[in-house]
Length: 347
Image 1: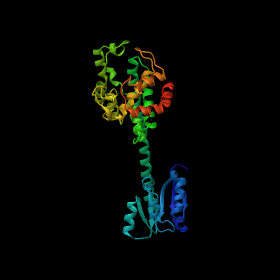
Image 2: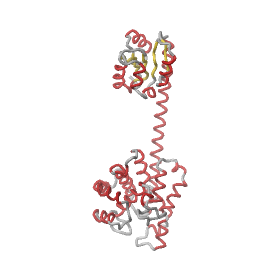
Image 3: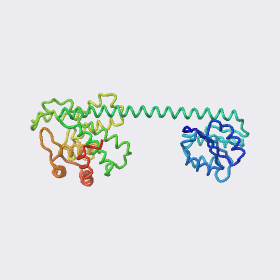
């Protein structure tokens, strides 16, 4: 039996159930219930198989409208047809208000009932097919967009002689902080993932920095450092200039993070000198994640620090000034963060 190829008939009159069954039994599996309560039980067990519901109005225990009230939102997924002998405009109004597709008067005319109901079933099935197609296309577009983002950021990491694992770890550390600390409170899981995706674009502006500065093994001069600091503004401008990026859900977070991940809690960061809560939570978290990962990674200009050295430097303020509450949260979950660092990221 194909999915969505059953019809549920809810009617306390056995004769009525037989008459309605005979109309559809050559094409559909017939499910029966003697009242609204029995109908709810069948629905719980077979919901995914049901193409339509034929619902009597007058029934003991739970009548047709009572059934609809207890199954709020049902009619948006499965077409419901109210079968009644009542000639009451208010009843019809109430039924339509609850999402009923059609009200069929008794006594039923078989060929008319079949035509009306099958037309609606075809409409619902067509809508499901279209929705599945759209969802698959959306998933492909999202996957392609994410792949392009990761390819771009990995290329930038490679150009600066850093491992592409860095951006994957930044993603995972950012997501972990949002999921495991209070800094993610109030955010839906989807938004947390969007922020994590945005985090991998934090250094996208480095594409505009000359190789002589980007790959310099020693300490940068004051003039060179000013140029390097420009990667934040360049990153924001780059993201603004790509229309396809502006259409992504992660865009606003990505631009904010690219521009502000070098701001400091004490206001001595760059490029805008933001201070305290003037720095967004995503930018605060990515700044901490970036420093935590960079300290424990070997770079062309330094050796890797140990885990404890990295933690001590961050907490001691040697790598910038961070929100004290964020540092407290960081220390509580650092075991989990180090596990991410050790494995190179979960992706």
